[in-house]
Image (cartoon, rainbow, N blue to C red; front, top):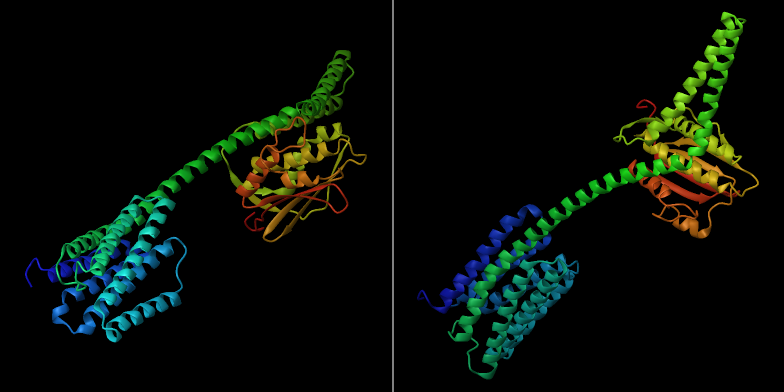
Length: 470
């Protein structure tokens, strides 16, 4: 063989088809990808088939054309299957086996029975052109779907090789070229050059597909993390604004609640001042008045502290929270509003020390929204009662609020909790949406339903904290 002979060229192309997929597999080995294994293995088999063509004059006849063509057919089936795995539409293994068997039987019929070299060559080339075209289309589809520039290169390389094989098949059919693969000609040289280019483009392009995908995934992960952080930041701001809006709407009732201890302080101070002026107060009487003043001052201070703690922006602090205590604290916050609606909030006997791990302010916001919605739903009801019940069934702790109102309409039950959906004329539709987000953020959920005896039922379910941890 001369250095520039056709067999030498086949050996070079075959070696490239073995080495390039081996290098690609070394790069992609860590991914443990079935499609990468099929692609690289198919490339290696294709290279062995081409090398057998190059050694044709030195090996038995059965190991040249029959075995070489079978290896090349199976190799392209494997590469097509690799792409189909990536597109989530793989062939069944049985179909691949039947196709390979059919290819071999028809080949042997033309070769051994008819002994027609042209039909044998045309059949082999036709099958290879079909598979290369299929690989081209699959690569193009992947390039459009991903999108991937490397997949476009793979499609281009295989498309050019398919065209060159088609030209050679037509040249043999019309008699301008010989069906023997080792007899030189422009069509043979063109096919060899195209195959050599495809060996490089196919392997590098397949690596590029995975690298591009990894880069896109990294960018998507960074974008998702940034979006999540931004959503969390905006969510916290919206939640704070919702708390401020809620307290703004409750300002009249809160003012009334705060006015009671302040008025009591003023009255006690005036009585004490008057008694001192008259000189008829004993030490015990003054001590009792001072005790009342101190008690009402503490009460006013507690009301102000509850409002201040609830409205100010604070970083999230996860700690054990007693659901029963939380429910009573928020009930005190809405007590004046409940009196304005002439409604009663009843607490069922609940197990003591039902605790969850969470942020006290955020969980208070959920309960506040639920209470206020229940109270506002009672505006037109003859019976105005709200029942609060807490239960613990491991691994969940549940705070259930039921009212005697009209309950949810079918549309309201379906859309309640969706952002900006509201049935109130002056509502913003963010309260329940924020409450659901907070509950989910704490690993639980907020569910809404109509009670069997009427009225709405809202359940806040959170992971219960074991008694030892609480």
